[in-house]
Image 1 (cartoon, helix red, strand yellow):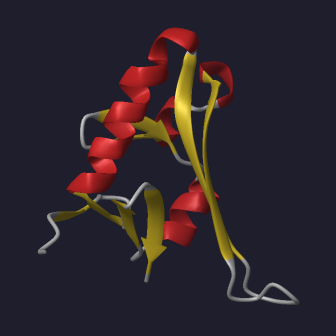
Image 2 (spheres, rainbow, N blue to C red):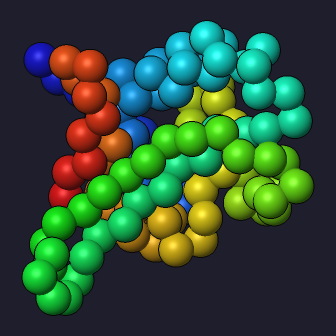
Length: 105
């Protein structure tokens, strides 16, 4: 199956499936998160015991702790991605399949 992919201006690539996952999550939970925005964090370990491992997290955070210049649109959904996470995601693919988010090089 061919993936419908888009490159975000900040450098990461995402599939339509990932954009759909974010949109569905946002609409399912938005009523419980007034004054908050979805936040995507990504960490990739370069050194030490966990070198080569990476983690991602999607959570709701207060709009007060999420500078507007770091709000990005992925598909139809506004998401806060910290500058360091954007750097780690550069040239990586964000995809959603089989109930899981997948980050690939």
